Length: 284
Image 1 (cartoon, rainbow, N blue to C red):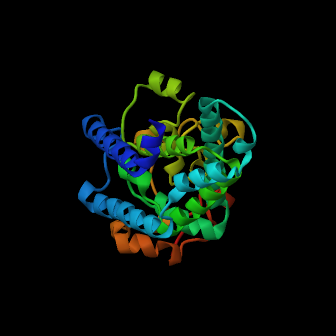
Image 2 (cartoon, rainbow, N blue to C red):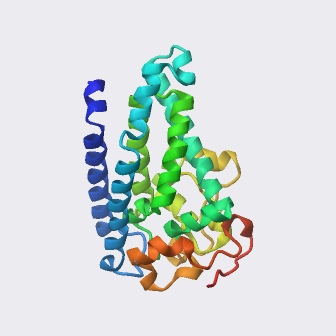
């Protein structure tokens, strides 16, 4: 069965992506957490367009992707996991946790380094917060992320099944925790012990800088609590908070061409992580 999953990895990932996307989109329509500031037609074509563009770029630059590297590492005996004998389930759990920790560190890094923040701020410049925001990343950032992932998979020697599991979980939870969906507070509090929830991650998309520099986790919620970057709620509340970046509040900035050019535009003074506690407005 595992061989079949590995062989059909693109189909597995696409199927899960479409299933979760549709489920969260329907959930948003039925029980939205916040009122939209822009209509879907003003944002979704560009957000979905960037997903399509990133898919093409990744297939051209990395035709084998992370699972291909995992297969090669397994065959050649590279990486830590290939030096020890562990049950497959335990190896998969360890690999998923370590890969998730690397993603957390990467996320902190793209907020801390000015050049990388220029790339990442396109994700934060969305004026609303919904399922499409979860896949809205600049192509250059996506390429950088893949390079880091490939290096981690090689050094770790993660099995192909573990890599597929991680990729599926990361994509699914990214769409879930970016959803404009309402959860009962008691359920949200429980789920935060296991996974990043929409209310937890939405704080990270606040225009308030001290809030934008919190809750970096995408999948597992533990890293923010362990490293002191956890913030339970936004000061203005989830309904009253402002989403986005002050420098890019023109609806025209949501066009695909503007999104792609955004890293090369002004508005980078006082980049995010150096503005802890300073609610400074970025301006062109």
